[in-house]
Length: 265
Image (cartoon, rainbow, N blue to C red):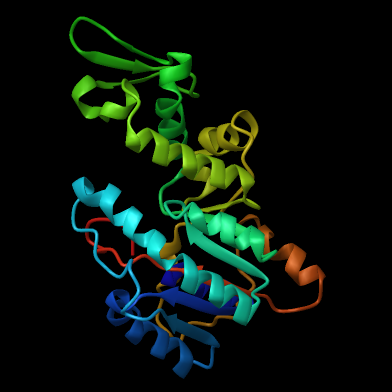
């Protein structure tokens, strides 16, 4: 999220990051460096007494972790009411932020740390229970159809939810529904890497999305010229509406308190 915040700042947006005490130490140094460079960025830390301030240290704990994150509904709602941002960007695994953003009339963009290819695959696998897009042969090889390319993998590599409806399926349905209700998605990738899947995600799946990656390139030395005109315009189209309205948007991000080496930062 800090890399995405830097991208917004480069284009003149006032940015506030919402986070929990667990994540503050991961952001503190980079935020101070940005401030010393003359850029405006705010950090709003939710109280440590709130539920949802924890680390996700393994995939097996994901269900419990995301349920705990819902304990931050109230402070998130209060933050939107107090700061009235022009837009909010939250992780795909925080679908409840869509309901609160809509209630406060704040546009929400979904942030995907993964590229278009895995997003298309996940969507296709999630739909298998109803459309039968996955077939398994006698050697336990699974074939996934409905994508720009036929995808083959071992059945053991697939999540149980592909073949059996469970709580994970229900959660992913809420993730998908929240994105469909959102104002679009920001994806950490670039078009030349996976053009067929970028087109598939937008045209076949009907999603509104902007590719802004790879965001890792934003982590240049802090004396880098942030006013450079050498930018990929397709990566900043999501700011065009704000620019046309003649104001600098306050983009309010929500940063998960996860272990960065395992999941997202």
